[in-house]
Length: 466
Ligand code: CO
Image (cartoon, rainbow, N blue to C red):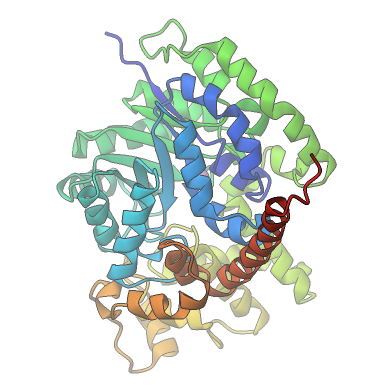
């Protein structure tokens, strides 16, 4: 029986976010859109995640313009984005009215599939965005952050898959941001998820620990429907397995994608010189291209390892690295064993460093740690360590409701604040997510437009050379 596996290509989002700090500009994307559009991909992931911030902050581009330009180019292919649930693309929870408006505008500007996740897999943090996505006619995919630990049994995955289906999501994704998912565990995991739900299942992993393409092979054999890959010049390392390799792997089997290798080769040819350019200008470091087995040894994502090293360097305490590595899993246990992904990875990592450097555990706590233990990020799979909560929060009672229930509507406040800069409806959302960065961008945009206006005026006066 033929059951072709589908591929989502991440070249326009995760691939360059993982390898070159999200710096691919729109002008690099547009010339290849035609060819990407002919492959027959399940979707092209091209927006959300860190691309929004990078557009405004580093590339001086309007992320909404990028989305509209891509939508205009892709005639046949679904466009996918990554959304951090109630955090949207920022780092803290937003009110429901902001979440609803962001989802509405994302779909109105061209997104078909929204992949929504939460760092704690607390499905309550996904409710508003899933509902909004369905209301706007979008495909709502719920992504589960993959992690290891006592709490994450086959039963846990089966049950949460069942809950996701009853929430009205259209598909499920396993998001293995750290490359922790090894081939035979993937087989078991897929079976557990499939036992809980009949929704299409997509696998998302990173090549960091070197096992990812084998993981996909076992996952597909076990019933996974879609795999996330990147065209080869921006694949492997901390990015995804290579599209061409997976296409070739399944050729002539019941899972044959049917994609045209010649066409994929042309796409790779387009990106190869850009890869070389990125190596030369230092954007692409060979460090991220190798195999990092430490991520498996310590079960800590690669990005978190390098963050920890640089935080320790700043304190002149690099010699404490091993101690901190051992403290991270202990803090994670005290904090209810959450997956380590933004922002939980920073919260656990920074607290572990404090515990080691302050000469006593929880002598000091960050504001984020306090919020975390107060339940403001949501609910963890296991309960927090009661003694630690008491030590840090004293008699303050943690909240147990959906955190966003306590956030009053915010949209009107942002609308008011963005007035001096506003040129399009979407500007309020850029402002809500990254106020300072957005204002810097709006100023830049105004300045550019003044320049253009001057040249226009000149041409009217016949001052243009003919
Ligand atoms: Co990823």
